[in-house]
Image (cartoon, rainbow, N blue to C red; front, side):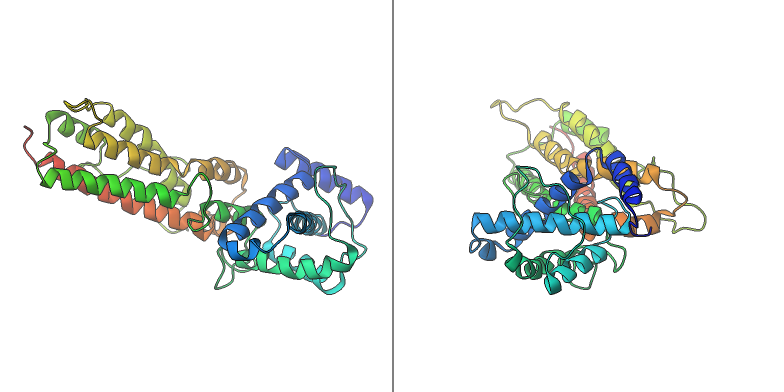
Length: 335
């Protein structure tokens, strides 16, 4: 898409972006800037500790202006603007300040821009926030020239190293593995005796020696594409498995001491792990539905960052391990 060449073109771009995001282009750019800045602070807490609160607000506001201006110049939605375009705008500001380009209308709660004498300096610092997402060899994004701001933000949310108050999917994975290992130890120590209910629950999951997963929506790749299921298919299957695991867990009564039975806890934890993919699927599914005649492999390069690929792979590996455990349970005679 070409850059904005007139006020009419800018107005049409604004209307299209508003329809796409459900909010104005500036609020969306500000939201994305907050997320990118927060990710950088969590990844580099030592640098963030040296910044004053006012300076952080100014950095975030300038980053949002950079994202907004790049989207406007490219005539794209904020999420579909390439990280390369955003970096190019930021580089121009690092070289020459804010310049004479367009600016959004900042609201009273949007924060202030840096003083004009510091704009170039702040922009140079922002390049360090953006470059990890440009798709280069050391990037957390995807391939060069294809990484989009929306994809970068999905990668940020999937980053297991960026700590948050809610924890990360990697924390959920570790918790599930810890519960599974503790249950196995109890089994070997004779503290957990396999029951008929354990057998029934293991079989009810469909993982204990059952047929391979049947992938549903979206449709399998076409004849000209690779024959493996897409990211959305694989993630969708795991999300479909989660309620099956929870229902199977409910089949197991509490222990004689009134505590949750080992297999109940294991199944519940692994259901929670699969459910960690829900927000990404909710965001990607409508993007896939709206795409026009693009094969799934090319679409994934634009929209699915490495962080989500890793999350899916690690979740699948964990579920395969759970399947092995469940199969072994069915081979132990119940007591």
